[in-house]
Image 1 (cartoon, rainbow, N blue to C red):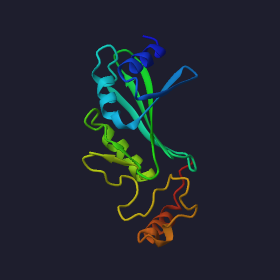
Image 2 (image 1 turned 90 degrees about the vertical axis):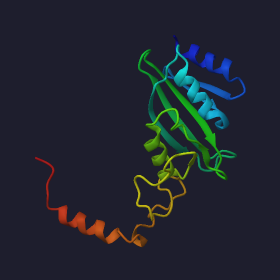
Image 3 (image 1 turned 45 degrees about the vertical axis):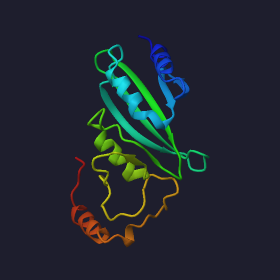
Length: 177
């Protein structure tokens, strides 16, 4: 099946949810409304002719200043059987930065969604354990947001001195030949 045929099937099944189809360098992105993300992903996963059984990645994008939707959640899907790749993009507003979790469809979404939450502050409704995965639990803010302070709150974080001490301790090791 050709990539554009896949998007046509999505548009037939979910005509009200597909906002745009973007093709760039033979890669497709389908821009959808976030309200039925789980249903769309479940269909893409379960539909025998498509079989998007592998979630390669979920990431966030911050379009600071873009109204009404500042954030975007990007899902990269792959069908191992048919070797199709598809990118879904769902717009998420700044005021209510949340979208439903796709962990019920792909269990591997767990860590991707946690990372997206940790770095961008986008909440995944229904996630089994939406907690920080990269930053300490007591960290304030979300470092990949474009309005995050350049210098960050590191000096206010209680573990900052410990990190500096470890860096100094290992400074003497050379990783180059």
